[in-house]
Image (cartoon, rainbow, N blue to C red):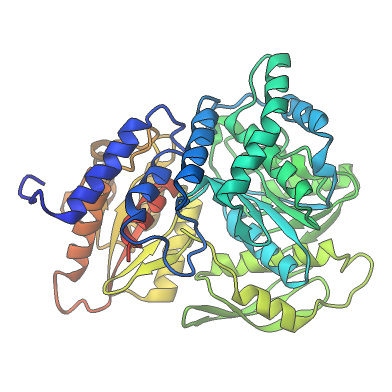
Length: 505
């Protein structure tokens, strides 16, 4: 770093990035640095054409208004501080006139694959001419990603207007409750209000954490989706898949249809028991629906899916990995259930419409290629199960002759488990830290990485821009490795920051 010339535009850009972050350290770490980066890079390139992730607003007044909203939200509890209750969000819904009752909902929980599955459900519903609202978290770059209408993030102006509309009611609830509404609770209220105002025909809602006491759980999802459950947030949700399933099963409402992805045995037992207790109908992956076949293709994979109403052949999914194929099967079954297929009638959905919908699916930061020569892939895997799925997908879909990892994690995750999942596929690993307050220190991460990989395969670069440059250099250093690549992973925030640095023009 000391040899880098001051005139290096990359250095100047990242220094500006750090200055903006430093100015906004009072903000919630989960929504601060990535937004700051968007402002730094906007003047250089703007959003890549066709990018599903919005950049900062070009209008200075709108950008300032959005920053002010973010600053106000940052004074509330962040997403990692929780008080397990839906009392506050229920009170907010009451004073808002119960907007979440204005439309039917598909509720999505699980440990891994929630956002990608929600985006697929949304794409299918849109393709069948339904107006949709989608609420997912966390965001990759822009807070406005969390609330989508008709497949696109809500406009910044509308995000600000929605916040201003609900703010008086939020303050009313704050005054009456023991604790103020949290950052996530306010955003949830905003999403439900925005969906009612649109209005939407259907909402696709991803839980923030857990299920029973998650802020989203004031909806009566006619379809409850449970993606694969594994160990994550064990300090809050439980130390076994079965214990975690107890909490996540809280989204299963009386009379609902439950779409279950393949689950560990103890988790499946808990979820099935819950469904019986509330007289819900269950469809299980591998039994009532599933992936019949899949073939790797350029830019994704070709699938044959078995749904609740029949088979759907020759479906192209522009996402990589077996886990994405399984997410697609779950999403298809959820949409079939939403339309009553499997309960009221058995005919399949129109296959051409299904094909068209899946062909449009994007999932930023999930097995996303952002650069070639060498190929750089971003994936937000942050727990061992997610990392294992990503490792398998990278191996299958790319066949890199030499793969370099860039890993930056949060301190509260199973870091060793994540690194062990990637050890077989990484020739070398560059450990780093994102700029979130939750990030694990690069040297501490390196100490764990050395135990997993050995000292000769580990390089430490505390700054993410230096880590990316080092990894690309390692991937290119020997001419024989024409098929070298880089995988950036470990955290949504790490991936979001890397995305900003790499997708610049």
